[in-house]
Length: 283
Length: 249
Image (tube, rainbow over all chains, first blue to last red; front, side, top):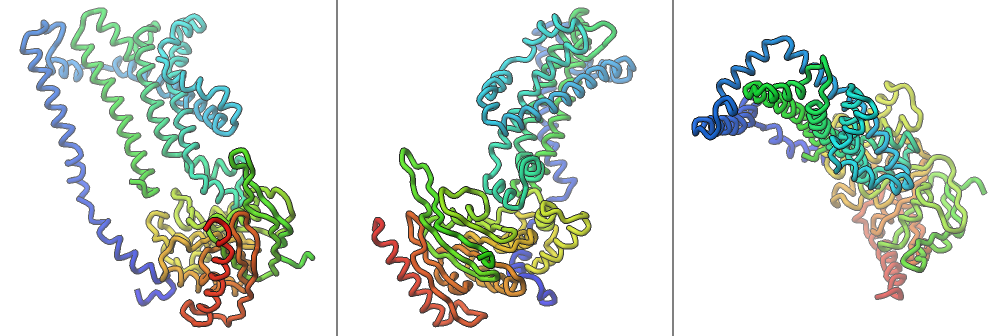
């Protein structure tokens, strides 16, 4: 370091400290050590499932074993109309979730900014969040008939309160000192939100987005099972049809698909959360 | 008298505390000449920080007047860097809020400022990857990026170790002498005040008032270990004790 007299003297010490941080396990090994407990749990679950089927607790046409179910899943995955149904469900989920993010974010910022709005609707938002959003479906059907709009209403009312609550919690937890620094630097009003408060609130906001997605997904499934719309073979609707025709293999195959989508999205949120925390030195 | 960089006249600030008001500042009057380096020494809770907050516009005074010529920057005891931005981006944000355009110009100036605080090569580190002293260097670069005429410093080196603090003192004085900055520096450490200031103001506690003023006419550069500095700091500490005694000791 003697060639760099420009650099602050305490720098040398720091460079020495950070050396072994890079000595992380190799990528593939890290992936495997992340993967194998999950595979083990999955194997255990399938083993128990198979054991219950073999015990003869229920006849096989009511509770089929893993082998026929996975065979059925494989057949489904090679059928075109299965993807049509999947597309309908995912489209509803994404549109509903996107609208919920916009509404939840706007409401969250309004509540955070204006004490009077917080006093007025702060508790209402929490109440809305603890209310199963499927209870809105009968009203939505009265208002919009059996239409896409009725399904979206349920999804939005399920997800938006969680997004708003997450953003609000994030904003409330912003260090006051950072806000003061921003103000001293000349950031006021919208600029203060854009440059300081919203970036600082990002971890809380992300937690709200994640929870909002979970609410959106389960609200959508409930709505699709109840609110069957003609010519829209959504996942929830196929689930209902499988029950009506006592097709247990199809029912379980669909449930695996629904579970898999939930897990995948959750993994995505997990990665985003860890990336943000690592950048900020929180993990 | 518009030639003064900072003019504070009979400034008072009270905070509501339970059912009565607590006076944090009482009739504080201070003048700073352009380019002057003035230190305020006082015990914790003597309203020193309140004074800086009022001058920076973060709080309003209860009575009295003050005038600051030009732009004001404020540095806190914690570096308070934005953890989601790199060292360079923290400085760039200050430039952006000041209206420096375009982005390439901000990047260039940020690089230059970080080099001036000896952080060349650390532009892309995030705050958690920097030591306490280095964070304060970034905070200093960020304050300089605001192109302020008056720099207010609220115990900025209070939480770094003694050796690093000494280095930072040296650099602060170097940067100050190379510029036309007026600095108002708050500390509870008499030696630090004598090391840095042209003048040292002793603050009383509850309510904060200027009790005494010391003129520091020691030649620069000053060393913390010089006997003259120690003698002067000793006198200031004595004075501080004297001010604190009637108040609850």
